[in-house]
Image (cartoon, rainbow, N blue to C red; front, side, top):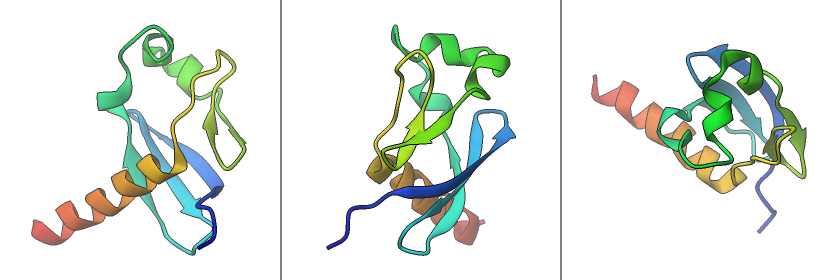
Amino acid sequence: MKLLKITSAKYLGDYSFHLEFNNGTAGEANITNELWGEVFEPLKDDSKIKGFHIENGTLEWPNGADLAPEYLYELVEQGKTELLEK
């Protein structure tokens, strides 16, 4: 099985990102519920959350915060399921 990696990311606002993965999956992930704790708290500032880049296949910020690509993939899949249920 190939390691899951983010290949493209765009910040949409309100802590949401459009993500594309190396397995062809694409969709929206909202990280609002992850913005707690010392490393993530600064990302509540909109100007700081926009400062992400893709490093080692996932989103990373200059302060060292990052999220596992597998977790972000789960958020994308969860978002798709919630859309289908509406």
